[in-house]
Every structure is written in structure tokens, then in C-alpha cells.
Image (cartoon, rainbow, N blue to C red):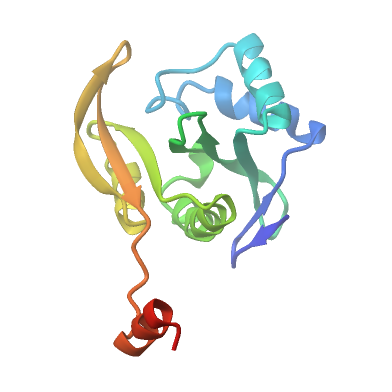
Length: 176
């Protein structure tokens, strides 16, 4: 499956994208808000997980005009039914709305495909661009938490129930 927006192209990962993924994840500036850069070895292990783990629903984000690698979006699902959204874009594409554009296309599609009713996202405190993106996607701030990397905000998104007209509800309840 491929998702196309005006400026981005979201494609499934293949081995051909490994070097771009490694560069994205090993860059200290790119990962400044994601607990620091990965080593080449740890980024390579993560890439293999992205390729082969059925619980990692990842897509590479490419520039729709020149096919340059821009970043990465993923929903990871867990055995307990939880799901977590993560994304990472190269510093060259920050501040131009590319992440918002890609995520506005990816997030509803993947939630529907996986029948997700709740998704979590974690954001470093003070990372205003990411907070703005989550707000645009309908996430709500649930609180402040802390782990070994420091404090962060926990955001949650819930599937809104479909509101039906009274006649539709009556017909479903009474078989009309």
C-alpha cells in the first residue's frame, strides 16, 4: 500500500531504504527529541525490526517530487491491545508542514486498517512542533510522565463513536 499526498509519498519499507533510515536515526540533531541518536548497530537492528515485525506498521516518507527520503512514521501495536504512534523526519524538512501532511494521511488510514480505538504518543516536554502535530491529529494531553530519558508528555487519541440519527438507531435496535 502506498499513500500519496500533495508533497509526500508514504511507502512500505524495503531493503533499499536501509542507508537512509540509518542516516536519519544516527543523526544527533534529528533525534534530539527522541532520546538521542542511535548507534549504527542499534539503528540497523531497528531497521530489521521495521522490515520484519508484524506489530510495526511503518512507512517511509518520501518527497513526492524527487523521491528523496524525508522521514518515517509508525504505529506499533502491542499484545495487550495498546498502540503507539511515532514519527521522525530529517532536519532538512522541519518547519514546512511535511510531517503534518504525511501524518494526516497516514494516521486515519492506519487506525481504520488496524481497527484502533486508542493510540498513545509520547513527546518530550517543550517539543512544541510535535505537540502541535498531535493536537492536529486529535490527540489530547493526558499528563506528564518520566522514564530513564527524562520527563515527557503522554498524549492519547480515542476513536470517536459514530453518532447516528434516531431513525437509524431505532432501526438497528428494533430491526426496522
